[in-house]
Image (tube, rainbow, N blue to C red; front, top):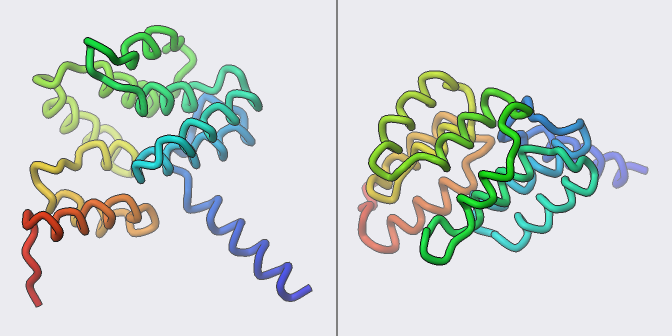
Length: 174
């Protein structure tokens, strides 16, 4: 019984900590699965993200968060990608404001992304997802800032920080 309670407590804690978007356009059950899909995607685990997003869509066929995740893990290369196609298929009128921010981020040209990031972070300062989108491999310190601001969501940022140390973009200081 004690082991069962411990396991349930850990599962409950993991679910609470995995809400990258607190208010989604999905029903409650699909929202939990869609947020797990986001976590997989940000950890560069695209196959589990694909599976979780599609599972969320089985629970709620109109789950915009899951559709956004599928677009996010699709290629943005216009010559062979399909992110733009997936984005066009999303009914934006059903998205929450935070989901619309993510949609706009993925729809923006690379020239407009930096300005949009700043605007979105100021509009959604408590959103782990929006703040994570503002990190960049051009500045690995941005991952450190994110990890300090959102410690419960820092696994993907810590992963990127380790890449920064590995490739010499970050230097270890004691």
